[in-house]
Image 1 (spheres, rainbow, N blue to C red):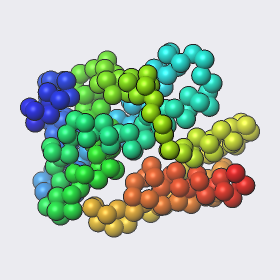
Image 2: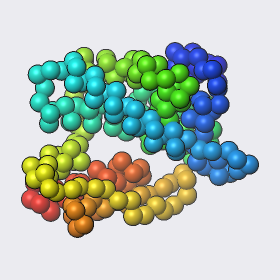
Image 3: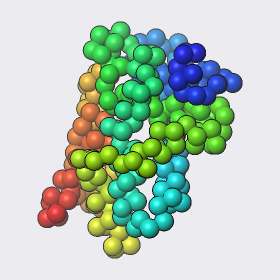
Length: 224
């Protein structure tokens, strides 16, 4: 744990926050006895990451239009990028996984590594405040913004949002409709709703991937 702290560049006052951030749901379900998974931290970290990246792009890319800002942000916070950041820190070596998940090399799965990175963001925020979380995030994101790499990632959610927001009275939302399989091989299904109507369905090994696939189907059905 101390080795990971050094790589994070942050010293915790309450190391329990980091321990929680590294606890996958498979481990929590296997051990029980009040052990909590990192899922709530992941939820918080996702929001903090979005705010920090949005703020940085707004301030440092004044000529970039809203649509491009959204696409750039989506590429920076997508699973592929967060997984790469986690690997750079060696987070996989410190993850707390169930025996089954370890045997299946869960510490190398992109969705688990990406979620852990978001959970670590939240753990730093809760332990040291927003400024420490911002410094940690920008350490990874700032070089990507200054030296963007070619990206094949297609952000279907942003594309769909840009089309729908032309009609302000329309409301777009994503609804998780299914979650199947063991912890090491989850499959999520999601519907995208326009007001109260289902306009697309999608599935994937993470909720984010399922949402992207639902948005892709909606775009196809709309003729885009």
